[in-house]
Image 1 (cartoon, rainbow, N blue to C red):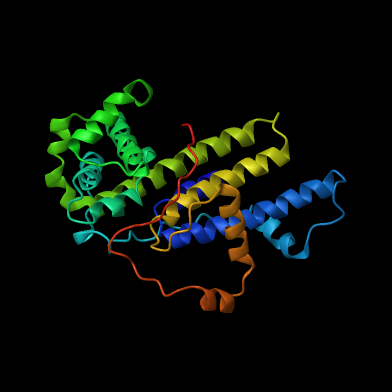
Image 2 (cartoon, rainbow, N blue to C red; image 1 turned 60 degrees about the vertical axis):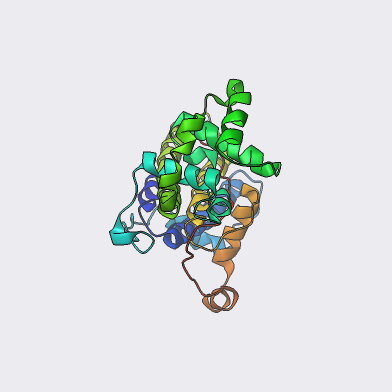
Length: 275
């Protein structure tokens, strides 16, 4: 399941979410089988019998063709420029309105550069407290908490991000996809290590695997254009399980027509997974 989850990271966000929802149903079936085996449950629910057996029989799906609609000519920014672009949009609100877009999408864990991550935490703090945001206030806030977050970008470096801000939408997409790949890779490693540790109780193993799947789905949701509200992993898990229990007709009737937005506005903060 870890390998399958890792392979999904290159696919379409909706494919990832659907696959995670199916995996969670399979895990629920396996959990019921385990509790039947140890005498804590009478039988497995009928709708979980096939799901519990199918988890071992599935073949790894081929990677989906990359989605190139969000970026011109299918190109993405490199990580460094993407980080600079979203910081520039947030600090300078350039183009006008870009600040609210990136603040609703990007989180500090999306940054691989420690100084950029520290700067983003400073921006988030100022925004949460309705304080003025510009290169001076951001640099000051970063300097004020440097003992906790590390050094952020300097005033001059922040001033130079304005020219990159025009690429903030591509930057946001690049960071979200990069985080998705990173989280899926880490989930695969964690699931494999957990499964190989015979000291871990099967119930705890199943719960751990399910949690890693939910985290990946939460990151993938940021790329669909249909954001979930900010909520706990338990709430997201329930939402995904409910997704598998609806009939195709119900799915059609309750889903709004999909339109890819000009920018991403999802507000999900997936739990951090250590490598």
